[in-house]
Amino acid sequence: MQWVLTAAQMREAEQAAESQHGMPSALLMENAGRALAEVARSVAGPQARFNVVCGPGNNGGDGLVAARFLLEGGARLSVAVVGERGKLTAEAQRNLKALESAAFTAQSLEALPELGPGDVVVDALFGTGLSRAPAGPFAEAIQRIERWRGAGARVVAADVPSGLQSDTGEPFSPCVEADVTVAFGLFKRGQLLEPGASLCGEVRRVDIGLSLAAARSLTGPGVPRLVEEADARGALPARRADSHKGTYGHVLGVAGSRGKSGAAALLARAALRSGAGLVSVATRAEVLEGVMAHAPEIMGIPLEASGPLGLADLEPLLAAAEGKDALVIGPGIPRGPETGQLIGELLARVDADVVLDADALNAVASDLSVLRRAKRQVVLTPHPGEMARLTGLSTKDVQARRMEVARDFAMEHGVTLVLKGTRTLTVSADGDLFINPTGNPGMATGGTGDVLSGICGAFLAQGFPVPDAIWAAVYTHGLAGDLAARRSGKVGLIAGDLLQGLCDVWTRWER
Image (tube, rainbow, N blue to C red; front, side, top):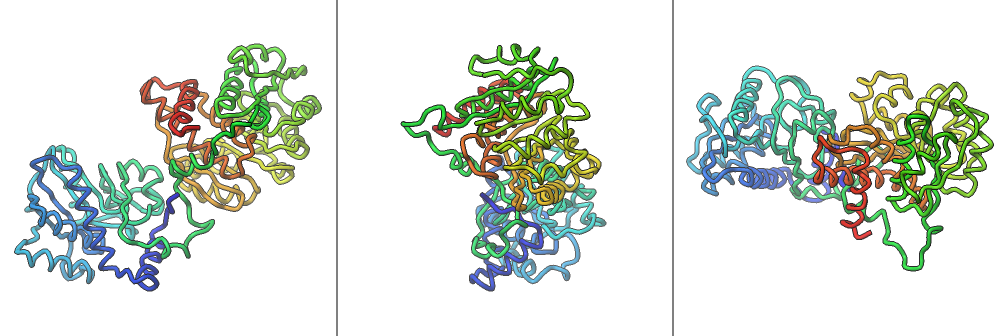
């Protein structure tokens, strides 16, 4: 996994690298500029012109180093330093002199040539420390970069696109939209949170010699981590030759209702495709046959009461949960005034980990104290609208503070929380936060959340520990969607396609 830092944490890491590990800031800048130049070359056309636009801070220093390496490589190069030369940081000033010592002169912004297809702009105006909207010549520089990009040039940003708030992912106005952003040393939050992630384009992390040891003092519950494919693959051990269906657990899904039998079926089939040894679905008797028709491997438990789920279903569900290794409650259930009480009783009495999704989340929103009374681990998988109902916030507020809202809720209520969306977040009850990089817009379609809940249930049933089981499930779910999109495209993607996508994941991982 990769640590994801705030601007302040990044400064601490850089200071620790110098004071504790002998990595001076000048060397870090040299390495950053070299990497920036290499990325710029990698996206350039064969006859490319390069415009490097630098600010007065150390981000500008990175750009000046990149310009020197581009010049040494024979690039057709123009450089502008925006702002007063007297306000350059010491490192930026030193690198400007090094560039000028090669008989190269930085130009004014207005003197830079126009760019088009095949050309490259290196945006080194502002880095992670920006705290207010760019104005004056800096705003003009950003507008010029955007004009060149509109004409077909590629934009490579140094650490973050200029105008982006690196801690929140929120842009000031104006803000550069990059094609590639070069993350120096460690990821920044704004590179991964929307809308910043989209403004960054492709994010390429480069090693600049910032020792991981220098960042170790920053690690812990306060520092999010980006999950990588090797992490998710490693969380799922290869199967033993002497295993049997009992080895891989029994999932019980409490799901489905009239008109929503597909939700229960998607949950069950996803659990089966994710390695659960056995999968049962408890649902209203009149829809059970429809659920089971989706796959002969699904076992059914009829709930004979009628109407919304309520306390009349408690004893049948307790009996159904006997001997099960994980429960998934919520997709497509008929919710009523007693549903929250029912779920509270199940949490307190069932000896299995429980995933709450969809209308189960809405049912417990009015009395969240039931979460603390659970006998085993509880996992909640809300989308932003459901998270808003759980917290009493607006959806806009949830989206504006995704990390903080998710962590606060998980720690307050002692649950593992999955806040779905672009860069889905998984937060443990201890506050450990995991950012998921997989998934695509084609998954914005009905039923994909039911598939995720089934994967979570299957991983829990197989005995994978929380929260590892959940962030691995989230990564797997997104990767299944990415692989499925290669086959169907994003527009044509439906939730059922993720089931084949899961098989593609297991083939890829040799699982």
